[in-house]
Amino acid sequence: MSNSNTTPSNNSSSTDMLSTSAISTNAIETDFVQWFRNAAPYINAFRNQTFVIYFSGDVLADNEFPSFVHDISLLNSLGVKLVLVHGARSQIDKRLTDLGIKSEYVHGLRVTDSKTMQVIKEASGCIRLNIEALFTTSLKYTPMAGSQINIISGNFVIAKPKGIIDGIDYLHTGDIRKIDTHSFLRSLSAGDVILLSPVGYSPTGESFNINGEDLATQSSIELKADKLIFIDDSNGIRDENNKLLRDLTVNELKELIQSGAISENIKRHYQRIIHACESGVERVHMINRNIDGSLLLELFTQDGIGTLVSTDHLEDIRKATIDDVNGIIELIQPLEESGMLVKRSRERLETEINNFYVIERENSIIGCVALYIADNAMQAEVACMAIAPEYQSQGRGEKLFSHICKQSAKMGLKALFILTTQATHWFMEHGFVKKTLADLPSEKQALYNYQRNSAVYIKSL
Ligand SMILES: CC(C)(COP(=O)(O)OP(=O)(O)OC[C@H]1O[C@@H](n2cnc3c(N)ncnc32)[C@H](O)[C@@H]1OP(=O)(O)O)[C@@H](O)C(=O)NCCC(=O)NCCS
Image 1 (tube, rainbow, N blue to C red):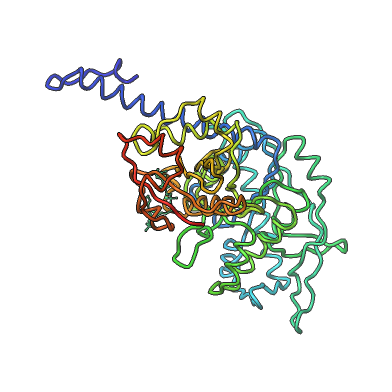
Image 2 (cartoon, protein in one colour; image 1 turned 45 degrees about the vertical axis):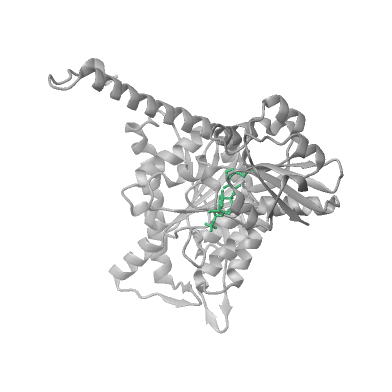
């Protein structure tokens, strides 16, 4: 587009400049089209879903908070029902320090005296007003201009005092007693966004300081939300080598807690996540607040950027069906073109689909393998094994292979064989031994492609 408005300098080749510019525009367009196609299934799936989003007080202090407001507005305009729960810890701590009030903590919980409660009410009220103002004013000059979002806040949360534990009176620190989900549902179906502060009220007229993360968790459970999302400073869930774990099942998270070396605070947070999942919230996300657009990246890209804890595995190894043919073609075509795999026509794949096993991840086929049982019903050929390049070297090949080994053993097979050109070592490392053509079932010997000259490997089961 810029070509028509700019004059190329005299000493450079205008043809070169034109073609370079055209290529880069095309690349941007291709990226955009690809991105949009990848995001489309999520846009579709999220419509009418309910997300409860907790964000820490620090998110509000960020320069990026207006961008966060746009992202929330975008979700709202896509038909997602939103309950926002804000934290206020950093704002409260700052006010307390300014006033010279020292908070007492016992077992990680603030003991909230009357003065502190007053500060908490002031901080929460101030935050609430700021958020409401941002939803009104900041959208005016953005891509979301013209969208009208009603933010609803109110006395939705009934609280009770935490009471006296081990002789310590926690005073105005409270627990959630009840959440008025009827009012929530009414507002959400009208397209309004609900905003909750970490303060609850008792029927006796007292206010209580409640934990924002607990409030988000409990709201998501009572609303039977589709997602509970935490946006804060935590950098997702990490393994012992500090590697980000992108997705975990509840059981894996429990194992992580049992492995120890986790602080009490983090453990409490993980237990909250487990509680949400076990109470029916299928997906809980942990997102780092310091990445611009982190919410959208987490929700609209296949792998996200944080950690997703879910009740079941995101990936499933299963027998392929005729609906998987397109996904398998997409996966194996580049490998066929590079000569790693033997070419298979669509017709052949459709006819042989019952021989295939696939790894499905969020509606995409990211791995496949085929098993062809020989006429003697004692051996089977392992063929067309592939893992999508971006998912390789993370143990998936091994999992898929061990799955078909188990299936083969169940079928009473005694051995597996493979004809391979470039993955001999992978199969050797998985128990295959080099053999000769004469060791293969006779029908396979007859079909051997001498030009391809594949090596023959056999594994006893
Ligand atoms: C072979 C393949 C299926 C393995 O899948 P994967 O998910 O990467 O496997 P895993 O994660 O279980 O194992 C990864 C290990 O195997 C090694 N590996 C991967 N491909 C290999 C190959 N062709 N030869 C030897 N080793 C290989 C990796 O280097 C890695 O080793 P490391 O753990 O020491 O770093 C995958 O690499 C692939 O799709 N390759 C292209 C297609 C192909 O060759 N198929 C086999 C012919 S049927």
